[in-house]
Structures are given as C-alpha cells and as structure tokens.
Image (cartoon, rainbow, N blue to C red; front, side, top):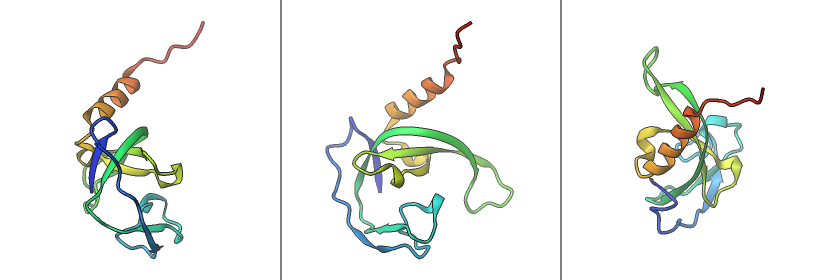
Length: 114
C-alpha cells in the first residue's frame, strides 16, 4: 500500500471488507487484535493520512532484543477512529508535511499559566 498526505493524494480507493480476521496478514487492526477485526482486500491502494494522533517506541518486528523504532498512530482519511493503525516512519514517506507538523507540535514546550 502507498501512503500519502491529503495534499498529495488525488483520492482514496474504495475499501472492501472481505471477512473477519483470524490473525491474517490482511488484518487492518493488528495492534489491537481481539479476534474480531475486519479484513480488507489487499490491493495497491493509496491511503491519505488525516492526522497523527500519538507516537510510541516499539521493538522492531522480527528482532528480539533489537533496536526500538518510533511508531505513529495514524488516523486515515475516510476511515473511522477504530481503524487507526501504528505505522513506522518509512511507511509514511509520502507525507513529509504531516510528519513535520507532528514533530513541531511535539517540540513545543508546555506552557502552563502561573
């Protein structure tokens, strides 16, 4: 799948649900899998990032005791909040403006009134 920002994408392909997840590769919610996730048809589609909601450090998949990577919680344009996913930065290479805006917002010092 290709990921782009809203400004770079011309549109979003129609999603089709093809079943209920049984821990399959097509699960759209692997981070919060509860055995009832929807499975989307896997195609080369372009998805728009609506917003970055959070970030976390996670162990790199496939490496026990290996390096940690930053993952971003992505709200996809046209998809409900329940379908947000954690994505690594390399997945989001098509939306540098969204990443830059998120990083700037995280760098601002907290200003509490005296």
